[in-house]
Length: 266
Image 1 (cartoon, rainbow, N blue to C red):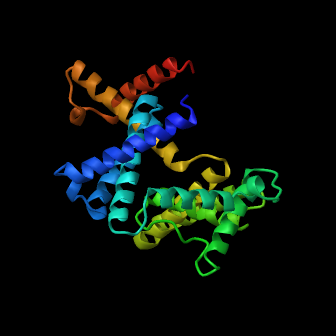
Image 2 (image 1 turned 90 degrees about the vertical axis):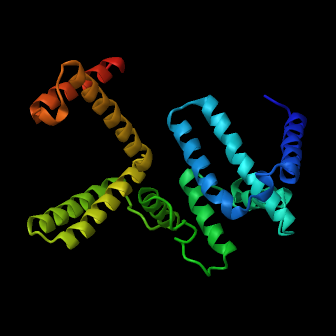
Image 3 (image 1 turned 180 degrees about the vertical axis):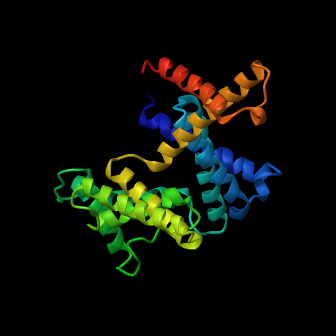
């Protein structure tokens, strides 16, 4: 692991490279915060994928790409005389110190839940109480993540179940309401109730410390693996999926499932 001086030298090196690229590179020199925005989103998703794959080499690479964008935005801001990378870092340091009074102050905490609750309360004080508890979540964030964050922020100020097991009654209630609307062919109401059902399931995941987005993506990848097996096996036996019965496809699907279970030792 590098020592502090080596880390400083590495950071200084990338800052110098950014200065050179901004001055001399035909592409880098014309970029704006607007032109970089969608590229930044792409880089964050690539980092997310590397994390989900537990690929440390890819994580290192993607972290570098994200860091590049942070430095790039700061360089553009410094040219506009708004702020520079030092302002960004110092602002972050001050925020972390302020929001961790159990480390840098005299506020006692017993667990991570109290730390999170203090964080949200201090965040509101920074805003002088002029913004909602739920503010700060980007409108464009995927719906599953947004629901999870909304619930987590509400929990931070005490709006939560007393016991996590209580959530299951809410899940059952929402499922019954959805089924009722479907059975009565109320499509618009059914859509609303399905949203409520999803929201309650995401709430259950939060309470049981499961990230719903990660869980769904694992299921997505599992489906892809098994469906790919179904396609390849179908080709090997000289058939086409469109000409097979569901029972025939299910038989091959179960093969894929058993193979995965054997590989995991289940």
